[in-house]
Image 1 (spheres, rainbow, N blue to C red):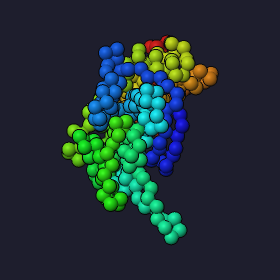
Image 2 (image 1 turned 90 degrees about the horizontal axis):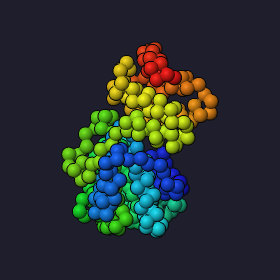
Image 3 (image 1 turned 45 degrees about the horizontal axis):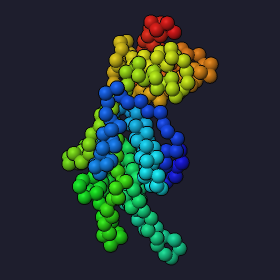
Image 4 (image 1 turned 60 degrees about the vertical axis):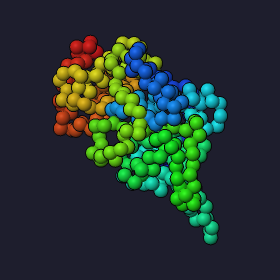
Length: 289
């Protein structure tokens, strides 16, 4: 994966190696919807809990786009982590001083709409309203961006340009501008059921089928689908389960590693550690671990 970093919140890269991606179900259409929206010039919002595979889906799609197009920019992803300090200037760009002269430097939105590729607005509701307005004309039928500081130059998006947003609806108190969500085609995503999530863990971590399924079941319980753990709605990512599987593969004690999993949750604290441990012991006993 080749990357170009532009600070902690902006990153541009191409997916060089095909990621492992498993659809939500045998009948799910999220990848086809992404492709059809791309071909139609429509913006997409990937909506789901943290670590459920939103970025993985996008990277798999971007890889496919790059392989089919074979040009420099198609499938290139510029990720912008949206937060309260992100403003319109950061997205569009501006002039910087070099000695006694000034030079224009494109921001991520201008770069992508000039050249094509995917502008990925991660956790979009976290951005300020004035930053959100930058994407207005890029996400409707106009597919344009007007840059006032460049004599109101209007950039028209090429066919290989796409705006993709993503967010976890659980964690955002900031209300988006009312008309903004309607500019995106929404693709809902969620954690996969244990039997399917186990296949992901097994494929990526290269552990045996039984351990992969055990971890997937534990994840399912911690997220609140099971009984005994008071963390309903907890966002334990598939990535955390994969990390646990890799450690277990390196001969770490499975019980110790599995009991560490709740520590990545926002609902975890020293005070409720005992509750988590007791609940997990019961779950692991029932699973024969």
